[in-house]
Image 1 (spheres, helix red, strand yellow):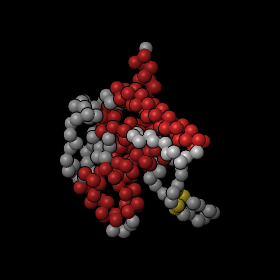
Image 2: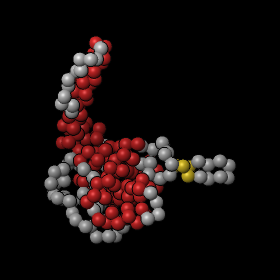
Image 3: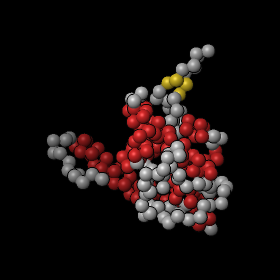
Image 4: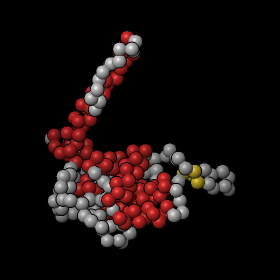
Length: 211
C-alpha cells in the first residue's frame, strides 16, 4: 500500500486527475484482495490437501492456495510429466520435420504455477540444506536460472505425488528432512490422512456451506 499520496504541483490538471484515479484503483484492489483472503481462509485452511502442501519446504499460505486452486484437481493430470509441463517447468519443443529442438521461454501451460513453484524454490534454497545441495550440484554444469528451475521442478514433482497419493511430505529424493516446519498457522495439528478420492472443489465446499 502506498503511504505517500502527495500529488506534485508541477503536474498538469489532467495528470493530477490520472494520478488520483490510479490511487483509487490501488485502494479498490487492496480492498478486494482483503475480501478475497477473508473468504478463502476459512474454506481452504482446514482442507486436507492445503494442510499437506503447507508442510512442504518453500510453501506458505498464499503459495499453497495458488497451487491448489490453479491445479484444480491433481487427478486431471495423467502423470507427473503432464503436471510439470502444465507448470511450465520443462523445455518447450520446436520441431520441424525430423528436427527436434528444445526452446526456452515456452508460454504453454499455467504462468501462475510457474511463478508459485519458482517462489517455492527460492525459499527452499534459503532454509533447507538438501535443496541447496541440489542447486549447487546443478550449478556446476548450468547457470543459475536453470539450477533454480530444476529445484522448482523437484518441488512440483513432490507436490504432485503428495496430492495424488494423499501422503505427507517425506523429504527430497530419500534424504532425511533437515528440519520440520513449526506447527503454527497456517499449519494446523496433524490429522489422520483423508480418505483417498477426488478432492472437493472450492465451489463444491462453498455450496455445501451455504446449503
